[in-house]
Image (tube, rainbow, N blue to C red):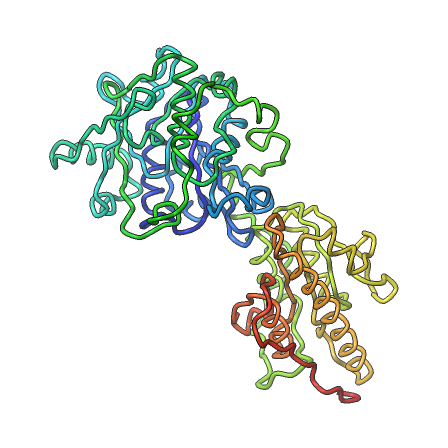
Length: 512
C-alpha cells in the first residue's frame, strides 16, 4: 500500500538524534498495517568505518519496525561525484531518489517524511495505510506541529502506541498545534515532513531534482512540480495529524546561520515544468549497486558468527605482553582476529585490497576474517610474488598499479614467530620494506587529496603497536592513539603538517 521514505547518516545531526529517530521510526511502523508496507531508510554517506545509522540504534527499534525497515547504504564513494558541489554530507534529493527507485512496485503510495515525525490518524482511520486506501491520486501535504525538545525526550522509545496517544493529547492540551499556511503549491510551512504521492507519478516526474544540493527548499520544489502536474495540492489534515520533534538546541550544518542554501527563486518561483528531462536516465543512482541491509535477519550476529568460525578453541589463559616494546614484537594470530574484524565489518563487501607484507601466518589471520565476514573483493599483493611464502590467487601489483586499483591498504608488521637470529634479521628487513611501500602509497594518496571526487582510502598495519610504526602512521594519517592491546594501527591520509619531518627508522643492529 505505502512506502515511507526517510534518509540520514550515522552522525549527531541536531539534538539527541538517536532517541528522536528511534521514537519516530517505531511510531511510523505502528501506523503501517497493509501487507506490502515498508519503511525505506537511505543511509547516506556514513563513513565506511561506521555501521549504518539504523544498525547503530537497532536495539532501540521495535520488532515491528525492524521487519518493515529496508536500509539502502549510499557510501562515500557514491557521494564523491557530488562533493565539489556542496558542503553538506547528506543530500536529500539523491537520498530520496535512491529510495523511490528501489521501492516496492506493489505499493501505490510513497510518503516522504523525516526521522523526527510522529503521526496520529483521526477517526475513523486507524493507520496511514487505512487512510490512503481509497484516496484518489494526487499530491498531499500536512501541517506540522512542533514538539518542544524536553517533551519528546521524555518519551519511551519502545512504547510507540502510547507515544502517539501522548503527543496527540499534548497537541491541544498544551496549545502546541498551530497551522502555518504557505502558498498554494505547498500549503504549509515545512512541507517536507509529509509529502504523499502515487509511486507512478514519482517515476513520471523523475523524482527530486539532483542539481540542487546546497540544502533547503527541495520539498518546495517537489510541491511546485506536483502542483504543475495535478493542478492542485491537497491537504490531509482532516485525516491525520503530524508532530515534529524539534531539535535545534544545538547547531547543525544544515541549520547554522549564514550558510549557503538552494535559491528559492530558482528552485521554486521559476519552475515551469513538472518533469526533469536532464536526469530522466540517471536519477536515484539507477546504474549504481546500492547495498540493502535488513535488521530482521540478525545482521548484528554476523560479526559473532565470523569470530566463532575463525577463533578456534578458547585461549587457556590471557596472553602476556612483554613489559618493554621493541621493533620486533611478537603477536599471536588469534589475538589479532577480533580487532581485524572490528575494523573491516562496516566496509563494502567488494572492497579491493592491496596487501603489503611477508608473514604467511599474519596474512592467513587477515584472510580468514576477510572470508568469514563475507568479503568477495580481491586481495592483491603489492610487490613481487616470489618474495612471499604465500599467494592471494590474484595478480601482484606495483605501487603505481595498487594506487590506481585498490580501495584499502593493509600492511603487516610480521612478527608472529622469532626462533632464530637469522629470522630476526629477515623479519626486520621485510618489515622495513613493507613500511617503505606503505609510505609510497601514502605519498600518492596525499597527492590525490586535492581532488574532491577522490574517496579517501583506509590504511591499516597489523601488529603495528611498535613506536616506530606508530610514528610513521601519525606522520601521514589521522591515526588515533589506540590501546596497545588492539595491536592494529589505522587511519586515513591527511595533508602534510607544517614543519613536519618524516620519522627515521631505528638504527640497524645485526642479529637483533
